[in-house]
Length: 299
Image (cartoon, rainbow, N blue to C red; front, side, top):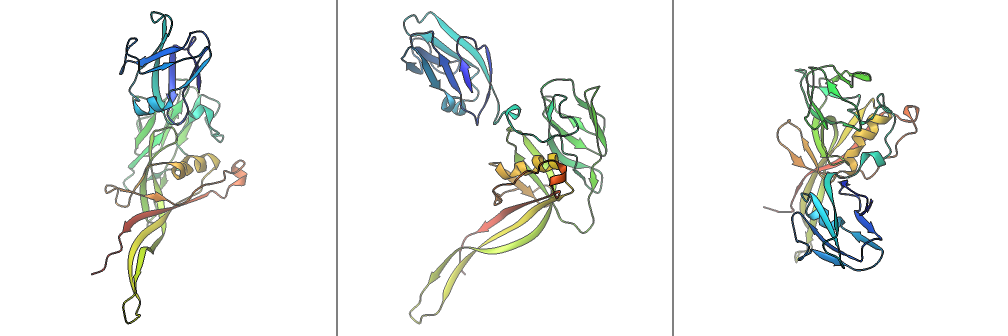
């Protein structure tokens, strides 16, 4: 994003985007923040009649900085400042999002239609919500966080509404004989999502194998081990597929097979092609993961 120094007053910054400050009024800048430096002892000095300064690294390193200051090099008493807040990783207003039931009503990201209740009707999931306007709430069968970014504590069918626009969610019951994994990941916006997936196709493979050649030419191989499986969801519409496929691009994915013990995993699936509407999807998502790795050591 490019911020015009002369007109900016409040800036919302998303950390995976660039932060460029533009100015053609001052005769160079002295830059400091509420955390570091001052007009007489700036963090950096910029020269030039037309300036573009890249402050991305500074804000990524010090995301708690709340005010940035820029003084005119020739007249340090003249300066501009603006308030800045780190909102997350990527602004969802700039991202393609498939149509859903509340699309066009200021709710950009809503929970997926497909979610699971456990056998005791308690869903420990944490579903992302992001709206640009409206006063949104859920009924007594779920809860919304104070910052309006999470919907959780779901104990059955619930309603999401702003008083005018409404969507009813009916979680799917888990099936006996099916293995489930609870997955939590950091979404592209920077919010943690948590949801149940089916766990299928468990596998074990060699990892980090090395060979020794003794004098009698026998084979000696010391083998490590990699355990993995596939996270699967079926019956997805196009929006649900988009919502859950976000796990593929997350930098932190954790999985629990018992609902309490977590392991950070490696996602091996690299991409997904989203369908052109619900008619273009088979409604299935498979995400391969490497779950645990063991070194090559022999007794």
